[in-house]
Structures are given as structure tokens and as C-alpha cells.
Image 1: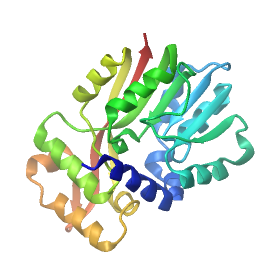
Image 2 (image 1 turned 180 degrees about the vertical axis):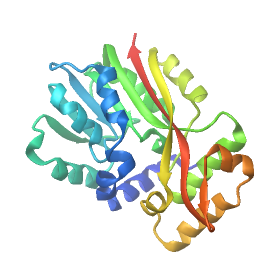
Image 3 (image 1 turned 30 degrees about the vertical axis):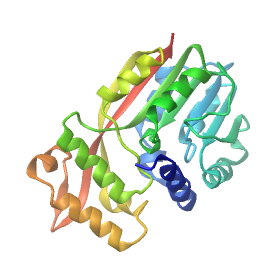
Length: 258
């Protein structure tokens, strides 16, 4: 995998589809946005960082509870669109262009850091975790939400393949078992976690990133031809050779810096 090329594809993909991520059902809604506030118990003197903010949904959820939120993203067009969308309603949200693997912030700057539905776009997840640990204050909290692959290699390969067919900016979804050592090596201690099944309405999901009908057809064909075990695990619902929906695993986890 050409890791720098992945980042270029991320900028292109999200720059071209910025507004779709503001309005996307799977990004803008979900119980996890409420749950992350419950888990973090933010305080009004905190400075928060939301990495790869996208449509700004986490920044928006945190803003009423903290002193300041820095909403960062690799893509300037995405940040500009999110800033315009949130408007003047949130005076304590500031927007910074930033690479998640090379954050432009001083050590021990933030009381809390969040990253939601984004790490699968990061080609170097180990660097991302180290950067989180570096800019987080001692006893600060980090909360991550992202899709994860099953431990079984056959299922993991299938999931990462259909994600790359749909979205060229996809780097890789990791398994929980691969994420945990990265956090441990960065002296981050797991506080709590939760795995849930997330449903994608296929027509909406595939069109969000596909550039043409040929790409949609490739994704559809790949999923339809998968074996029975894969169809069962990902709960793929098919109606007359059309895919209605599928499910993936999503992991929500909270860490504290030692």
C-alpha cells in the first residue's frame, strides 16, 4: 500500500464529497454521539480535540460541555464546509487542518481527544495512536469509534476488500485484537468498550463514495458472489439480486493516559 497516496486519495475523496458527510445518516445520527458525552463526562474548563472531524458531528456534541473544541481534519474543503454548516452557533469550535499521524500541537495540550469513523483511513495507525498519546494531558481521555474487522482472516479480508472497492481512500479496518497493543504501547489504559452491529443501507452507502455506476456494480458483484458464511456474518440482505443492506462491527472504546 502506497501510504502517502492513500492520504492524497483521502483529500480528494472528502474534498469532493464534503457535504455528503455532513448529511450522512451513519455519521450525523446514532446513539454513540450521545453515549460518548455520557462516557467522557466533559467539564466546562476542558480543551477538546476532535481528530478527522469530517462533518463535525462529535465537535458539535462536545461543544456545549467544554471550554473549547479544536476540530481538525486533513481536508481543507471538508473543514470549510463543516465550519459553514455549523455557522455561528458554536463560537467555541476552532478549525485546524491537521494530519492525524503528525498533529501540529504541543505535548499535553488536550484534556480529551476523540476520533469517530475515521481511523480506517489512516495508513499508519501506530503513528496516530502515538500522536494521540503525545498531545493528551496526563489522566486525559481518548475516545475512538470506528469499524473493526472480525478476527477471522477470511472475513477480515472480505470487509477490507469491499471497503476499498467502494472507497479508494480506505486504508484498512483493524481488528480489536490489533488495536489494543498499539494503545498499550503508548501507555494508554482501556477504561471501557462496546461493540455494536452497524447497518448500512446499501444504495445510500455505496453512492456516497462511488464515482460511477461501474464502481457500484463492482462492489455489488463482489458482495453478491461471497460465500454463505460471509453473507451470514455481515447479515447481507438481498432482494432480487439487489443488496438492501449489510452490517459491520463498530467498536467504541475509551482510554486514559497514564
